[in-house]
Each structure stands twice: as C-alpha cells, then as structure tokens.
Image 1: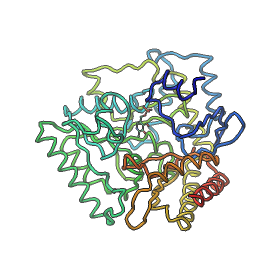
Image 2: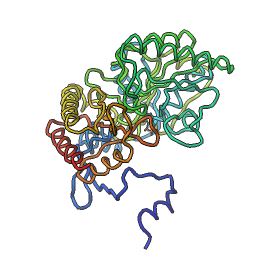
Image 3: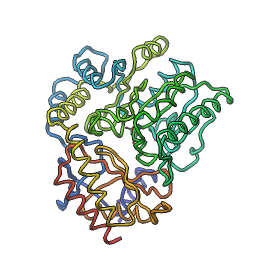
Image 4: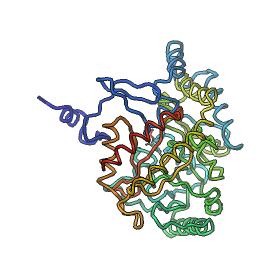
Length: 428
Ligand SMILES: Cc1ncc(COP(=O)(O)O)c(C=O)c1O
C-alpha cells in the first residue's frame, strides 16, 4: 500500500517538506497546544502564526460572524477596513500612516519593492547575508536563506552582514558594530553604483531571524541607515516574524532598534492564521506609486480579513499580551540560561521578549555548529511533546533553535517546556 510519504510525493511533489523525520500529524489545536489523533499534546514553542493562541475563540467568533454577514473584495465601501487601518497605523511611529493590504508576507514584501522603485526610481536591493523575505519570483531572486541555484544574488542585489554577527567573535562594542555596519552600507551602495544601479530598498527582518536571531544594540544601525537614505534608498522592515507586541517593550521589532523605517511589512501573526498581510508606509510613497501604477488584490483587506486582524489586536490589548511577552520573555530567557549552565551543547542565547535563538555548538570556545544534534534535539523535543523551530546562517547545520511561542504563553508553559528541553538534552 502507498505510504503517506509516497502519496505526498505523488500529489504534492518532492518540494512539500515536513519539519519532522517521523510522522507528526496534529489533528486539532487549542491555545498553546496541538494534539494528535491519540490525544497526545504538543506544546507549541515554534509558531508565531497562532499569535494569540491556536483556535482563539475571539478570532474564530469574529471571523465566522463576518463570514456569515458579508465577505467581498475591497472594491466596495465598508468601514472595517478603515477602522483596522486606523488601528494598525496608531501603533506605528507618526508618518507611517497608511496601509496597503495583502494576503501574505510575500505579497507585502513584493509590493514594497514596487513602491520603492516608483518612489526613488532605483532598482538596486540590499539584504542581509541570510535574509528570507518570501516566495515570489522577485523575492526568490534575493533570497539568501536557502541553498540552491538561486543562492547567488543578481547584480542589482548586494548582501551585507547583519549589524551583529552570529559567529562567536562578533564585534563587541557599539562603536565597532555601528562603524562596520555603516561601512558595509557604503560599500554596497558603491557596488550597486559601479554596476549601474541606484539603490531602491534595503530589506531586513528586525530580529534577523534567518541570520540567526540577532538582537543588536539599539541605534547601532542608525548611521548606516542614514547613509542609505542619503544615497536615495528606502528601508523596508520585515515584521513577519517579530511583529505584534512579541518584543514586550515594543509593539514592533524595529522599535528596539530605535529606527523609523519607510515601510513596514506585516504577515504571519496578523490574522492568527487567517491570511492577511500589509505594507504600512508614508503617504508620499503611496501617492507616487499610484500616480503611475495600480494595485488590486481580490482577497486582501476583505471584511473577513479585517475582522480577523481586529480580533487579534483586541486580544493583545484586552489580555495585555505585550506586558505578558515582556514578563514571559524574561522568564524564558532565564530558564534557557539555567539550562545552558548544565549542558555544554547550549551555546549563546540571543533574544528579547518571546523570540529567542539558542545556538547549539559542539565546542563553546570555537562555536562549532552542532548540526546533527540540532536536528536530533528538535525531533526528540517533538516526541516528548514540545515544538521548536530551527534557523541559522549555516545552511547545512541550521544549528539555532528558534523559540517563538504564541504570546499567550504562561509561566507554567515555560516550566513545562524547560522540563522537556532539559530531559531531551540530558539524553543527547
Ligand atoms: C521574515 C519573513 N518574511 C516573509 C515571509 C513570507 O511570508 P509568507 O509565507 O506569508 O508569504 C516569511 C515566511 O516565512 C518570513 O519568515
């Protein structure tokens, strides 16, 4: 009989990757947990899509009520799209005052490039060395996170190191990191110029997740970004991973960097699983674009997607989840640091709020990546009932555990995760 793996290959092709080496088949989810058919629970410390908890009742209620009332494309008049845009922009620094809605993070990043090009007439793109921003043809061509034919950048794209390296000997001082970053911007702009390209945009994730989850010092990018602006480029901050109060101190990840981008890209957590994303930008940027171009997206900003987005923001506000992210983020970090004292394989731990990267190394002094062990630990964690992600600049090793629970996480959840994590490490 055909196995599920064979059937997947036949119907979905070989590209339909799974996270685990053994069949992990969740059949339902609720709050912090997924459950399999036998009723076994899996504590979700991996996913930022169910941002306010799996199957959040308030989100489900808002979506289903709106679904049974009216769901049309945004070509018609309805106020919820305005109310939602108003609510979103109220969380942003002033100037970032309008929203263009999309269905996914990829669509939003793709649209942001069109906006940048229309605004400054440039073509060139900067990304970080290992940045991932989505799956459209354009974004795939600048994707630096995956091995394969596309790993070389086109000549209009230059990749620069994130302002803090994930390697063991990254620059310690603010001055060194700031000067190095500004210098890298200068070189990238000059490289583009030598190839005949003016800079259009610099894309970066405010937590540099696929560069290894990096939390550089506040304002360390300011001088470099000012130089990039003077060269005519726009900054596009990707909040698909860190956004919506996950940081704890700030609603958006870029807040911790003390910067104001030209565009902010939203995705995954925006609708708690309902597909909605957005580009939030300045009026002059959107005006210039619409002077000469059009943008229509059938499902984006529909009444149902706005209901989902509103409901997520309601829950964050009503349950004070930003404060929860701050408090629980601190507890999570200290629990992980306790674990690091016991197990040599745990290298540096980086993060802030509820987005943390845990390096796994064979040797703390050299920082040699623990490749096989990382995969094994992730698999074992799942067998024991806890889910985490993996990431990292080392494309083969992916030796960084990405810990990113829904922001409703409680102290008891962290204690349970910690207990499972320690148990798994004790066996490795
Ligand atoms: C940082 C970042 N940007 C953009 C995207 C693309 O979002 P989507 O898969 O919704 O198109 C992702 C998805 O993994 C992401 O992690």
